[in-house]
Length: 298
Image (cartoon, rainbow, N blue to C red):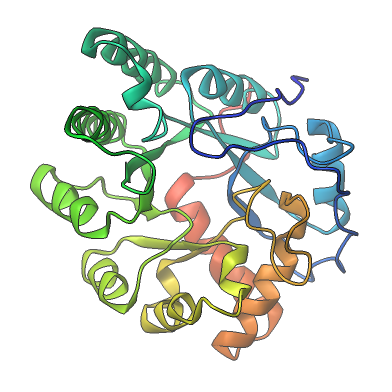
């Protein structure tokens, strides 16, 4: 099985941190999915192999995860590792902050063409993460490359009837404008939802999914909790964005799919639901977006 690759992309600035992965949470009564994780990023003082990640997932009754690419290299890795692993599906894309790094439009388009080829594989179920990021990308030429990449990724998702997994950072209005102008794919997910009630209402009106990560547990993020409660439960997904955004009370330590139970239990408490009901709703939503994990294995 392919092992994690140590990577530091333009958007994260991640160093291997001299900290340990948190302890296992209590197993879930009803297993669920992590719909966005980056197992290709080796993190922590003692980085885990893919096999170790999967074993910890099994120990807490996780059903599976979507392994997400952010470069052409990591997208190829994601598709390869999902090809024969029943617990993993793949999403492939160039992260918004990768697009401006290509020296010419041709080089960028060649990389996007590589993503389009990966999109044809049966275990690739989403195009992502793609979108707009105005936090780190600035300047007209850089923003133009980012916007071009986003629109090309949307087209790939629609051509292949795949979900679209959106990275939206400080670009809510522009992301919405793009989706409405070019037409959003049938299944569109706002990964690591970061919007307010206004964006939540737009997602509700358009049937776009809101995927919540561990940062919904952070005290300062009341807008995320308000947004979750403002939309239909049928539009809710859960993720880690591992190794980032580890939920409280483990914040500051590496994140991983086996820590989803912490976030799920937090969301269940917000909804006033029990853990099992919450997991079953999340599972129905996740399988509606990505299909069944058992299909397309080689």
